[in-house]
Length: 366
Image (cartoon, rainbow, N blue to C red):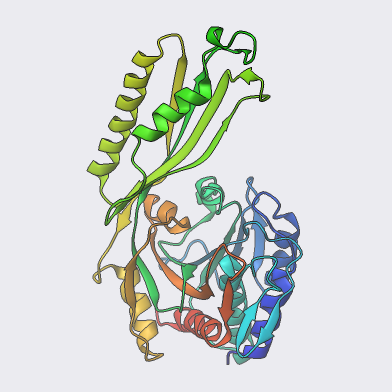
């Protein structure tokens, strides 16, 4: 039986281990110890992702195991988290995130396994995958050693809200960088000899789309850099942005639009050098209620008297990578709310539901 008090303690314990993206060694060590104490065998791949196998796991099984997936890293401000539990909600002290993304999912998976062990219940063979650097571009999943993954279906605990929030579509995400090289000059003595890279950057930015372009598409310039000191015409500048869409044709059109804008601005400043780089961070997926893993998820939720709330997401998860690799994956909520803000909070009753859902998934008949 799920023990809510133990679940909350586990969550509060692990969020106090700093694990900003790229700095997951300490949390990986802690989670390795916890999983091994629960009877799982744990190994790290070359990238540092953790892959754990249940005691009844055998790679020669005709029926493949189920995969439980969560990421270990968190975002800033996420150092020195001080969890506070009051009125059925877990929050930080207001100066940091609480780390529910995705340690609420980690705690739910750990509690489900511990509950099954306590009850000595029969369960499916399963694997647990804990990835690094999800928040910075799904790098852990993209570098995961899939030769160690035998599952064909995955439940990814990385959604916002209660566990019955099911992500049925996620966009393609394109990141881009534009580097501008102008010509430096003394701003007070001979500015006419200069060619301002910042001015050119402004010409580019004002011509680009911004914000929500349609129901399925967003575009954002998130970072601009340039210049050296205030009395020098800036020689270098950089623009960093992204665009996302559920529509592949729209993605292609925006890419062409960016190249066209760069070409037109290049004609305005022929002595400048403009270089662009577009890269795909993750790719679109979409499924309906006939998807086999969704059916598994919906049946488990029905045992809890929950109805799946099928929603599209503007973000990506490790599920994008798993589906690209042929593993049918469903992302579910993990009781986290207000992700990536100091107002982030985890509801205890929803966290308990997430753990119970995980337990039901593992106890399902093959």
